[in-house]
Length: 159
Image (cartoon, one colour):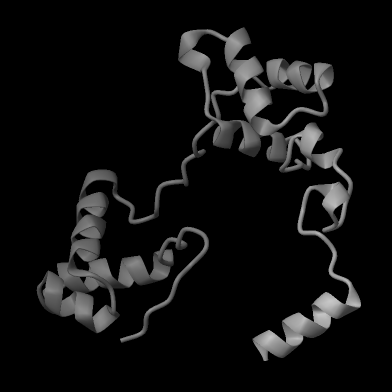
C-alpha cells in the first residue's frame, strides 16, 4: 500500500483514460468494480464518469473552482496598520473589528493571514517587551550573572 501526502489538490484524471474506461464499460467488458480495478481507479469514480458521459456527452472534468475569498476588507485593515504600524496582531484585530460591522468581524489568525497575503512581516511581541534591555542580567529582569566562584560551585554540584 502506497501512502503519500500531497500539499495541493490532486489533478483530474486524463481524458483519454476516462474515455477508455467508459468505452470498456459500454462495450460490456465488465462491471464498474471489475473495470475500475483493471484501470486502477475507484469504482465510484467510473460510475461518475459513465453518468457524466450519459448526461453531457463528454467525460471531460469540470473546471476547478475559484476557492474561498477572505471577508476581510483590506482597505480598512491597511488603514488600521497605517495608523498604528507598531501594533501587535491582537491590537490590530481589535481595532479592525471596532471599525467594521458585526458580520465582517474577524479573528486574530484571519487578520494575520490577510496581512501576510498583503506582504507584511509581523513581529510577535508588544513594543513594551521589545524595549527591555537584551541579555540575562538582573538589569534585564532575567537571571542574574554568575561570577567565577559561583560557576565553579555550580559545576562541582551539577557534575
